[in-house]
Length: 283
Image (cartoon, rainbow, N blue to C red; front, side):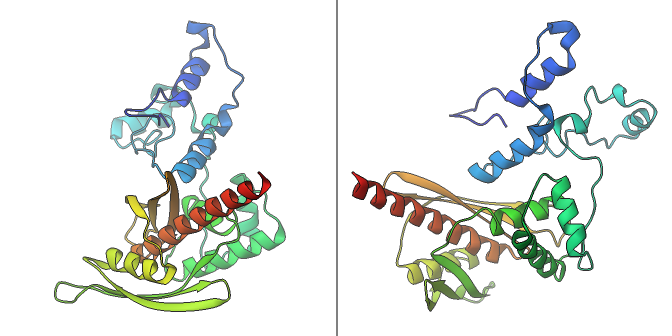
């Protein structure tokens, strides 16, 4: 993805694919499995919270998009005219199955396998339940939506904090207010927060409930897919005692996604603190 200190580093995927497509010119090759490039790029985005710009070569959403009529015509007649490499060569599927509220568990399981996720029955049940819930507010479920669901439901540990309920009042004449319930262990705690906007009020409520006040380094929102019903994906970066963590949350309601991202970051900080305590005991 080209990420690195300051202005970033040379994007490895661009070098790898340049060598792969121009073997006749350079006479060089790598042992990298290029079919894993796109999945690796997506994984890095999930870990760091740094999105890939749409016009990024190889892994950007526009990398294999053709809007111009003459380009589309040339692509239909002979792909090599405008694509010196295929989407499949970097792991991008040319078939996108759209899931919905009537999609069965078997269809979801099969599609997850095509995306590279080998989940057990319990995990598939969790993902299928989330797909059904999302389909109630969003007509079509795309690959990117599934990735967000798997990231939230499967790839997380035992969370200390969990969102139970969130209600936000905001507008041009109302004081932004967030009323929230969170589960902390066996307890359910309710608080209200006020702020300059709905997100600020939501974060204030979370800080009250958790009795924390970590430094917020970054807050970013991206649409996972297109359309007005797209899920908003929020990234939150918090700092504590010299360490920073990235939390992510996705939901059609951006305020709910923001709350989930902040709580996800808090849980990661708790994980860091618990491990630090265990390390001291071992010493």
